[in-house]
Amino acid sequence: MNLYDTNDGRFPDDADVKVRFPLTDRQMAAGRDTWPWVDGYVAGQCGPDEWDICVTGGEPVDHDEDGEPLFPLVFRDASEIRRDALFRAVDRIAGELAEHDAA
Image (cartoon, rainbow, N blue to C red; front, side, top):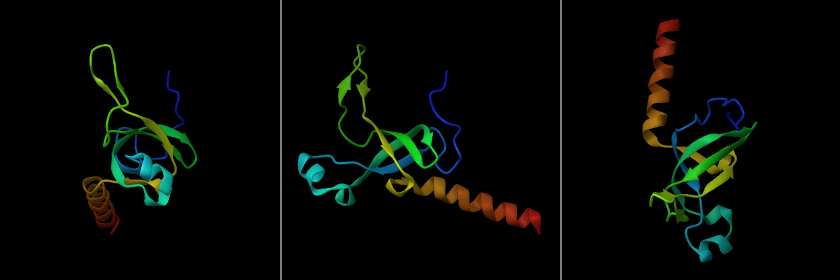
């Protein structure tokens, strides 16, 4: 059973992304615009402009019974998510190939 909406492809499921996330209480207090960009991946799309992101760039919030780290899940809109450089490069190349094929 999938709890997420159908992904529109802007940030595909399981894609590596950067997401704004506070790593310290001081950063939390300073506001979202000042939060650093940290590593994460897309768990799923929750709505028309909202994604559930697993933040892997900070400390785990806990560990499961096997000792594996558990990282926070956060809801973010498109303005708070960046695709990593490799993903952007693949998109650019795919677009160029599509233009070439259409010509």
